[in-house]
Length: 284
Image (cartoon, rainbow, N blue to C red):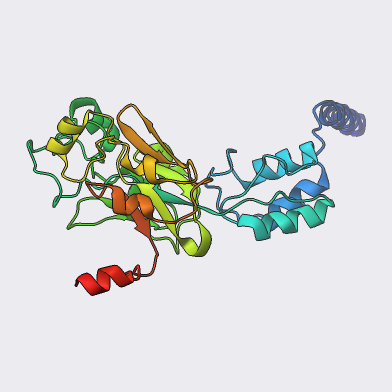
């Protein structure tokens, strides 16, 4: 009896030792080394995991930064320049200077500016609606107003205005993660520079139909007349496919284009009221 117990214990001990050795060898074989700097960089990032940086999450961005050993082309839109500077200090590398961006809704086809021609009763999803509907007002490029952009925003920075039927961006909450812009099937939402003192000028229209057709569907549509481009002294405005576009990298925020636009398609944000000239005061 004693010998049986002894042999049983011996077999179990040898089996355990063999399994431990196999486990050790497997662990060594498939061991993946992780640079300890990854955890340090990831800790500096905000942890939003929004994907705005182009990676699956903050840890994936941290891994990319450490692997590249450079911040060139890598940026956390949520954390902004301050976070990237902290990451650069940790790794002893210089962070690129990047201007803060914000989501801009480039459509002004509100209920006041368009007349409903159809009544959509399908799935409350912009992608589904875009497959069967131009828009209730008839514009084939305009905002559908069903709120898919709202549902993907993790920061409560965008909402549908019930009066206008259009999404509005809260610039104090928007972190430029691009989720709304990527979700919009019409590409109505664009990421643009926040601008000096948060001032921005942009064409609030993406309809490239010819002027008469565009104007018929929306009273404030861009008609591609080119008047704005002619008065711009900085070559910031181009006309392509019946549509004006303002390059925010060239625009000097002079607002001459706004005065020239016959349909009011060009919008300015966060500007003080423009002072009247002496001639305008005398005329009034």
